Amino acid sequence: MSVHGKTRRVTTRTLHDMKFHGEKISMLTAYDYSMAKIIDQAGIDVILVGDSASNVMAGHETTLPITLDQMIYHASSVVRGVQRCLVVVDLPFGTYQGNSKEALTSAIRIMKESGGHAVKLEGGREIIESVDRILSAGIPVMGHLGLTPQSIYKFGTYVVRAREDEEAQRLREDAKLLEESGCFAIVLEKIPADLATEVAASVSIPCIGIGAGGGVDGQVLVVHDMMGITQEFSPRFLRRYLDMGDQMRAAVEQYVADVKSHDFPNESEQY
Ligand code: KIV
View (cartoon, protein in one colour):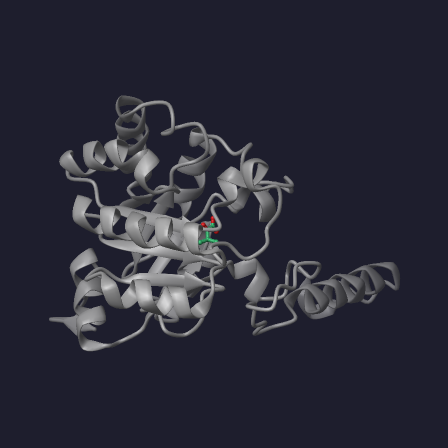
């Protein structure tokens, strides 16, 4: 990973080469400096500053309320914490759907004000003009198909997408369109594993799955979910690597008890 003592950064080109060589891509979300630093040091390939910050950081029910300014705040904090991985930043709801000029202005703000390396947009053919315009400004774009949480009020539910032939066919075509536009990767969220495997094999760009099975080119999870901080969220696709929520609660309970019992601070913890 290191050339002349310098860490070699992950770029969109690296991800392309990883797909070509069959090396899986690891991606996690992060929203702040300290978490991003740990995740980067642990060797992640991509950090997504997801608009899931709206849920896990701000406590909103959906991703819709988060603003561009808030995403820029989260993304700039993450960028300061990383040395190696690629940082992709979600364009939040309402900042790119209006027209392609608005989309470009939003993407430019993200790149200029946060220092992120790429943007992610949800959707296929309906946003292709915006994707083209952002790409023509030299900004790398990641697509996002399948379950697209910014459209939750249109879907009405978070169930698996593209089970029916018509929707599956539309998704196949949208993946091709995003590839042809020049997107460097696509997130496939909560679709049948067979369809995701087929789509990943049909395009030359990496497809990174969440709830899309193991036949894609990489995996992404929301870090609060895989660490066990969001304990109420337990979809089938989620693997928990820690029970951090329980551990943090126990630590705080111990601290409260230590303060109340005059145990903390002790002689060696004071001046
Ligand atoms: O916002 C987010 O965290 C995402 C991932 C679930 C892919 O878009």
